[in-house]
Image (cartoon, rainbow, N blue to C red; front, side, top):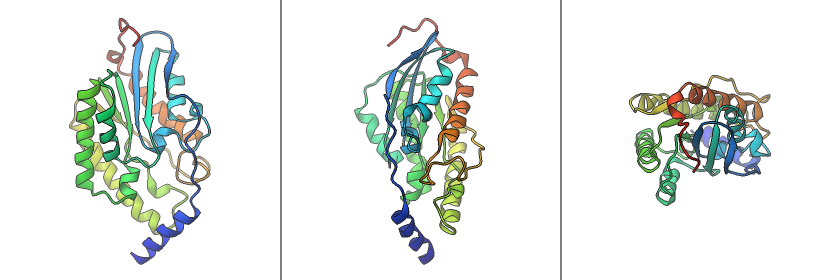
Length: 233
């Protein structure tokens, strides 16, 4: 434990704090049936690790969907956000209807020492809030990345946080499997210096592209999400 705590302090001293990328977070792109899309989450949802939203999850996602539908999108995300923070955000957000809501949360809960039981309760409450407030037809849950592969983290800190993140992710997938209208993203790309950002902690463009493609496949495999008669909001 003293070694891990010492490494945690050391990591903070050499961590490169990257800004959230520039670019619009709300808009409309594409042609065809309307799809109302919301992304909620932490720095990875915000796109930290790239310089513009075009290379982040949002930009690559809407670029891939725009050839199939008209996407009305919103991104609500912030660096450092935990699940409890997003639950508070929901209380102030307008009760707008969305077809798909994508969540990306959990890493900050792990690094900030939130217990698994408390976090699962918060995730369950988050899904309830999304379905009740936004009448979401589908919640796409991104889960936790393989933190044990983050280049920034030295051993044994990488091993400790990696095991905890994997534990959170396993239980999250079990929770998602019990909830109608929720789908977990299957992510199997190995992370290393070649595809992570310069801080060694956030995705690079290639990782965001793979993540976006996984979500695109989920959306396009569910034609019931598309309402050709839906007027643009």
